Image 1 (cartoon, helix red, strand yellow):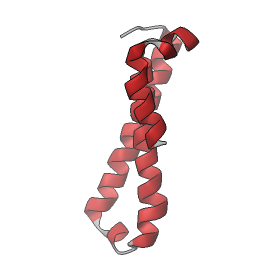
Image 2 (cartoon, rainbow, N blue to C red):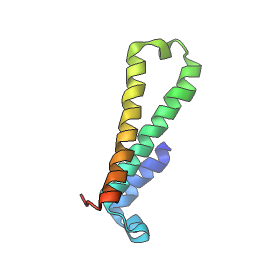
Image 3 (spheres, one colour):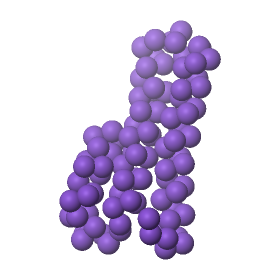
Image 4 (cartoon, helix red, strand yellow):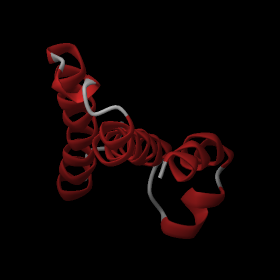
Length: 89
């Protein structure tokens, strides 16, 4: 997910995604950020908690997981709102 998100962030400004799907660059950037955040959350939640189970119990790690999940969901929600309203950044 992180590699896909980085691809969206780097390739969207060049225009090949815009010509293929017709969405503006800002939406591709938001989708890239959402993909990166969701990929990091999945890694922290599924992999890192199993490798270091004590770290998952620390309040700072828990807050970091929540912040990254919130960032990913916010980017997805913003993308959906922009697509539904037709607002172009």
